[in-house]
Length: 288
Image (cartoon, rainbow, N blue to C red; front, side):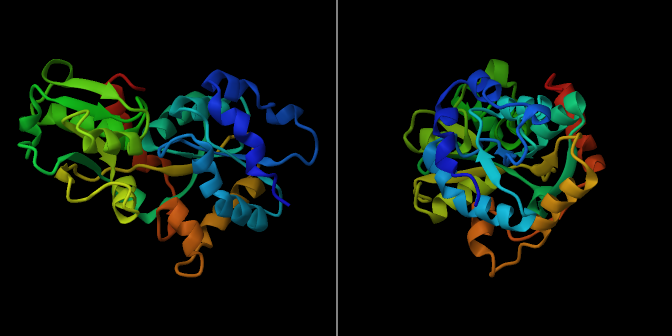
């Protein structure tokens, strides 16, 4: 049986340091302990978020043939550091956290959703807003997600610069920590506009968590490579391939419940070289 996700409740509400520090490095774990699978908190690090992913945990355990402990650290960087100290065996990372983790700890890319190879950030505002283009953002308040988010910070910041907007000078911006929080801040009028992951935005509209008539998209970025599932480099090839095959085996509609959790339709092999352009952007902005 997979370890109960509820057993990780305390991990989800402490600081990132407590989270990472509370996990024993793989080298000193007792035999038979669960494989640790982490996910960046792109939709938030709450117990509800973890409980919603229980079918994914159970699916991975059944395919791998081993107990799986699914953990959502409190922020993006905590997920990277947990891979580095061996607290996590596998993780779901964004493009930026992947290139950071690869540079620091040599993590190995495994698979990604087909859409991750041509991903987009969405710029959103209120339905009745006068904002219709990036240049309309001057003097406005703006929400990014996590500081290490690809679609919620890095690429939106980059494309604003490319359009002649200097976020440091032209905006009053804040970080919400995750994509749903950004959407809600825009919807509530706390900020004039924000940047969000396209898959999270559409999932929230479909689930009626935000009103699509009151929050609209006014700019979509050019495509870039984003999310990827990775393994820490110490795992052997058999272990890495076991998880990769679990994702590659997912089929719609048979596995719709799990695919909906992952906000995808199918998975493909990931290639580190595809992230070279994103690496260049991260270096340019001092984030790598």
